[in-house]
Length: 80
Image (tube, rainbow, N blue to C red; front, side):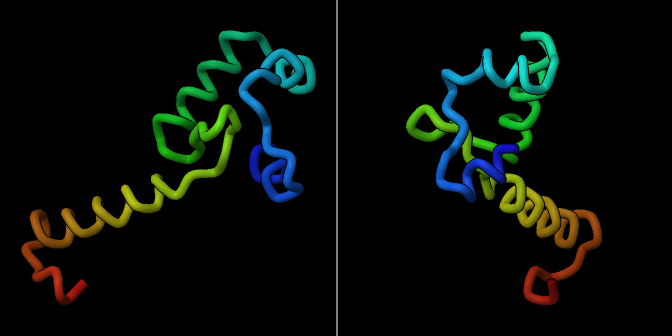
């Protein structure tokens, strides 16, 4: 939903939460639980009061892979 609306040039605004609850047929607690998990994981972000896809999750995975490669597997970072 976030991706589709963003691609169409009509990003979901943070003040649209009531409409989204009705569209998805979910309660407020479920909406905020889902939203907070997506924000916390770095999959979405809020910019200018709009929900946007975020690249933070990918950046975190790269950092985690680098740490695993060097700290756990004892490999040089250059060989990654």
